[in-house]
Structure formats: C-alpha cells, structure tokens
Image (cartoon, rainbow, N blue to C red):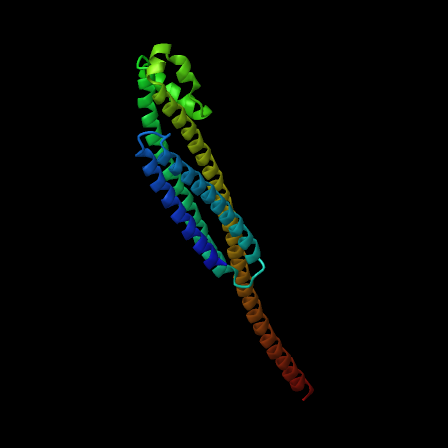
Length: 244
C-alpha cells in the first residue's frame, strides 16, 4: 500500500507541474477570450479538479493506512515509512500552493495594468483597493461603474479582460484556501502520528526499565536465597556441635 501511495504522489506531482505549464501558457495569451485561451482555461479547470481529488484521496488513504498500522506487528517500520510519505505529501501541497501564488501574482499585475487602462484617473491606492475587492468578489462590475461612458466604450474589450482576471483571481484564492485546509489536515495526521510514536517509545522505555528492575530484583532474590541457604547450613552445623 505504501508503494501505491508513492505512485499516486508521483502522479499528483506531475499534475501540479502540468498546472504550472498551463498557467504560463494562459498568461502568454493576448486575450483570455481567444479560442485557444478558452481551451487552455478548460484544461486548467480539469487539471485543478483532478489535483484536488488526488490530494483528498491521498489524505484519506494515508489516514486509513495509519489506522490499519496500529494493529500490525511491525508498527515501527511502517510508521517510519508512513511518516516520510506524509512529509512528501505536505511538500507536494506546498509546491502546488507556490504555483498558485505565482499565478496570482502575475494575474494581479496584469489586472492592475488593465484597471489603469479602463480608468487612468484612479490613484495607485484606488487601483490596489479595486483589485483587492475584485479578487475577493470575483467580479469587475465596480470598474464599469468607475468609468465614464465614452471611455468605457473605447475600452470595452479591456474591461472584459478585467472582469475575467478578477474572476480568475477569485478562483485562485479558493484553491489556495483548499490547499491550506489540506495542509492542515496532513499536519494534524503528522502530529497524531508523533503522539503514537511517542507513546510507543514511552512504552518501550518503560518496558526496558521494568525489565532492568526485574533483573535487579531477580539478582537480589538469588543473593537472598544463597544467603538463606548458607544461614540454614550454619544453623544446622551449630545444632550438630551442640548435640555432640
């Protein structure tokens, strides 16, 4: 089962690499509404849905395997293998988060430039605030309201790009939240495993101490028994002397 999980982890790492490649291709598109851009967007959505499912499956399978290991004899060896696997899953989640954060940073930068095209009168602080609001809501309607009619007509295409990128930023944020939850779940599993390992180590140490104490008790008992026999023979000899 460990080898199966390792294979699944390799698969999801490959999926994360694919998502990063698709991000780069999407950012290279002049317009998010081009036919090719729409195809890449669909591929991205499929890849992210698959990665989400794979990570959730890994989390659940690791947890199930951890529970099963508690009843097996070679727990120490299996726990060591499982611990290494958990850390690699966490590292994969972190890599995916880095891929998404890089994509968010690039999308934000482009969105800021496009917001200035839609309304060049906005101050840098207003642009930053507008992008933050758009990212949290996934909508670009506020940019429409902020633009006058003439300028809006001349920049309608750019406005659609603003709205599309705002929606994309909201999706990225949702993905990052999911990854944070998955990472937390894996961290909890690692902490739980650490508690189990500590309990096993504690019991092992206690057993060793008990054995050492037992050996000391046995040695003392042997000494007492020998002394008792010597004392008994000494008493017997004394009685013989008295009788004679």
